[in-house]
Length: 92
Image (tube, rainbow, N blue to C red; front, side, top):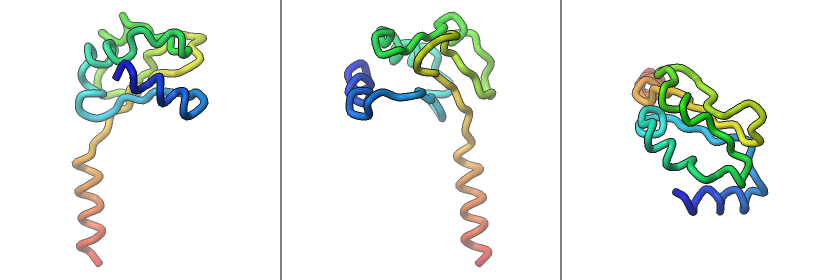
């Protein structure tokens, strides 16, 4: 990931936010920290202490105030989305 994000930033002309969601992104604090480490030169300023202690199951902004690129953790429930879509499709 350490080389993927900078390439995406370059290709897209920068980004407004990085969003971690589902499985590993939402739940593994150390993986998020490793992915975000060293991205300050891209405008990513993360509160690494808060990343390690932030509440689970809530939408959370782990970027520091003033960070050019916001970093969010957004909980998801893929199983519920699949169940609702399946119910809609089978009801027809």
